[in-house]
Length: 605
Image: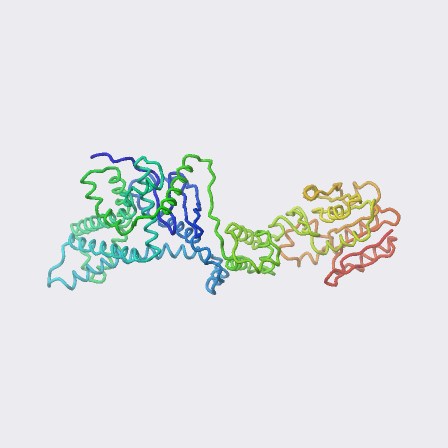
């Protein structure tokens, strides 16, 4: 046999308004957008599986692998092609799916797309031909006569081929399918141009045939032919062995015949794959005859592409070439816009069991989109990457992690402070404490931020009044590390000291401010799961929550006239005020928070 020109290791698939090309290490999908631009998404392929070199088995498994990946890539192209249509609100069914099953409707669509595609193929090309032939054999033949096995399978195969061609002809009448088949032709022309050793240009590709002998259409036709041979051979062998399925009755025999064909599909697919690979290596009159049926059917599945389609196919092919040649080359992703309304409903569904899920959803999207909360109602679409990030963050919040830890930051006094599980999350009440201090400090004051945690209070005081000297302390070195990062990032000159309250603090201060642990043993049990994720030592204040006040108030190293500011629990005002007055503090005052609860006690020496 005459050896054929070399076969490219790159194969392809037409998708909506584009082409996917697959190489040995990667694949790339190029799409023509509505604005006329070509966008490319590429991915690295996983290493070949062990079965990739096992004859017959590889064909069957490759078939289903390509079916799934082909559906996924087609849906990706559909997202690019139809992203301008995605601004509508999700319907009730989509909301139910997201809320009840936590499933994205697109994932459902892909799953059912594969299932329905397989079901349609089995029903149309396996079950229906078998039923038709059995009806003919049982009701149209003269009494006592039956079709021979080979003739039954030839008729069944002929019906199968007729249905296949008819199906292709019908769908080829659809406008979008016509364009899909044009991109199919562009894929073939591009690969043929490369295999002929020509430079990959639109002019050279235009001269190539829109048919290709390694096309998936050829595989389908070969599969139809191989199925006739294998089904006939297996039924003939079974008859020789004395197994006559007609003894079970006409209906049962039909079902047994269908089951037998389904069981033989892996063998049919695997054999067809090996035959196609073998035929692709040769080019002579005999091989051309064998390929002729598949090449003929390509008259339906391929159309002559325009130059813009060739440009897309060439772009996909060249991208795969570059990826195969350079393992370090970065892959790319489509910049798809997704409906904000749909994305928001999905995130809210993930957070369904969380309190204030709408508020949590707001802040997640504020973070990933970099917008103000007031701007969210005006948003129609968002980048796909922002959607993916919001979903991932929402899942972490749904697991019980505090929102601020998930985001890695907390807003405090108009600035973002980095926070994680090492430190207490700064809250609005502590902003009010800071505000009280800022009202009364003056240039040259020495300020101590005791139990600094994230450094939010001390750093803010320094940034708001550069003429004061700020020291911040904490017993936890981990907390001090976090506070130091915040101070450097925000440009605040603060002295940090590791100390168990005043143990390693030197000198006296004009102002001491502290938000110490003040949760009582009783209240610790009622804290939300999210709050319980914060450092225990920054929350628990002893049996009645007052342990730290009993240590701070008597020993505070204040100058004469120096002021002490303490954040307290909502029900601790009177007790802390009494402690301060008993220890000689003057003008002790309880300040209520914005909700009317006791929140701050302040006084001076």
